[in-house]
Image 1: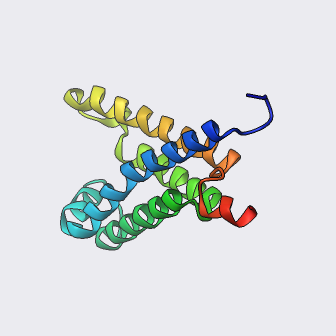
Image 2 (image 1 turned 60 degrees about the vertical axis):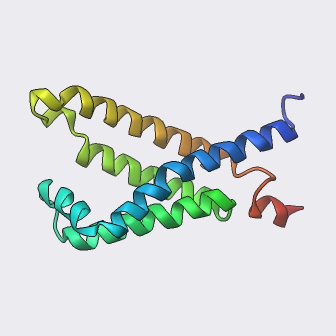
Length: 140
């Protein structure tokens, strides 16, 4: 393997990474769209306005973003959008610094997991979807 050339192995790893992100966001987004009331209740518990609308919007963002990553179409934009979404969720919903004592550890772990997920999405945005994607096919 050379330093600057992406090999078939690298392209396969990027595809596996994209599948992993889709496996995270797709069920979560579908869950928000199927159980909008439950998601809206959680959003409302954080004092955010229009919880029903935000539940639907967040579900759509997760489903559409996951599908874009999965097929490798407009991957950089999808990764950046999901990274922003994930950072937003980390700060608003995993605010361990304001959590009750019994929840601090769980919320801290969730917060830093979200930071890690966002970091991976930034790497995907930087390097792109690889050859095993719709974008890769378009480039030849």
